[in-house]
Image (cartoon, rainbow, N blue to C red):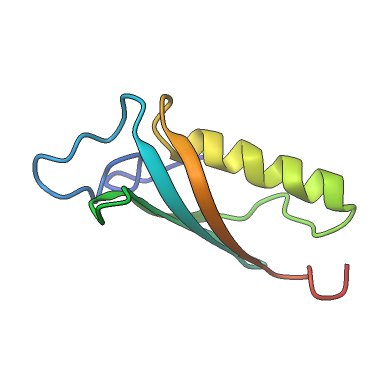
Length: 97
């Protein structure tokens, strides 16, 4: 997956924000037919990640494969030491899968 300049982990973090090191994150994902948007912030509201990448390979079925795809994308977009403590996911195709 290519992350364009300025779209990688922590690219849109607030000045002085630490985009890693074991921080607990609240994460929102919007998975569409062509794009995946990921936004993550601390419980205090400090932005850590705000990226949009291609949704290459996305399919809502089978559900186990869809969950693995989402987990793989998160591992690429979020800081390595981050912990996802809550997530909201909107995903194209899951309403009929």
